[in-house]
Image (cartoon, rainbow, N blue to C red; front, side, top):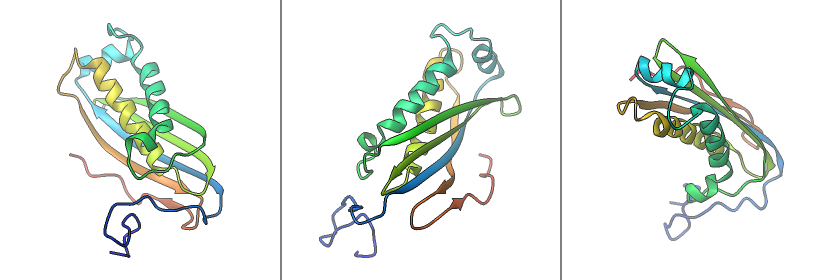
Length: 164
C-alpha cells in the first residue's frame, strides 16, 4: 500500500504532506456541459426563469465552490486561490450550456480539484435554477482539460470525451 499517495503505512486514507514541496505558480482548467431541452435553453438565454439570472448565479456558485473544495473533498488541501474564472457558452447543438473554469494559486499543491469542482457546482446550479422547465437535464463531460505548475509539469487532455 505504500505506493498509494493518500494511504498511510497502516492502510488508512491520509492527506499527503506537502510541506517539503516547493511553492510554485499553478493553474488548472476544466470543462463540463449540461444538456437540456430547447425550451429550457431559450428560457435561460432570455433570462425568463422565475429564479432569476441563471448564469450569473451559477458563475458565483462555481467560484464559491472552488474556494470551498477542501471542505467538500476530504483529502484536498485548502489553497490560497489567486484567481477563479467561470465561463459559459450556449450550445444549440447539444442543446445546452458548456462551462469552463480556470483556477490559479501559488502553493505547494495544484488546483485541479478546484477547477473541476467549480465546473460541477456551476452546472448543478444551472440545473437547480432551471429544473422547473426541464427536470431531465443532464450534466456530463466534467473533466480536467489542463494543468500547469508543480513537479510533474504541464499536462493537457488528449481528446474530446466520448458522447453519452
